[in-house]
Image (cartoon, rainbow, N blue to C red; front, side):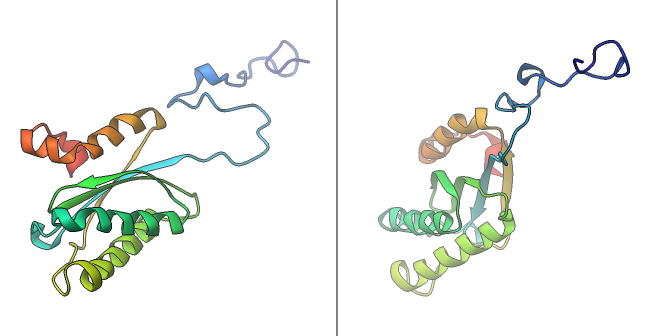
Length: 164
């Protein structure tokens, strides 16, 4: 007997179809036999007192250190960028990793790297950060926004929700 057909199951809701699901969950399949998780997170944090201490000559190496740490924690890094006083990190995280653990580790490792290798003794991040989940459909838009951070700030074309 078909689910939701006349008979003892009459009046019950039919199983959803991929097209009827919200938030782009078109990958849903009845009888899914494995976990399917896609957690995209956009994280933003600033240097201490928003001081412009991420110098152009050091920026790439600092970003690489952050990327390496995030990857070591099982993340896929989609984009990393920023300006002299803040960083944007766009990652997909495994379901077992808390965002706070990711940020604590990436900030700590990058701060240590900067103080030992790039700018001895004068590098520090602020204690707070912003972390925002996003749908996979928005990934490319946010990636491009992060990659063009310097342009956006120079031209004043900022998206406030992505800068907080």
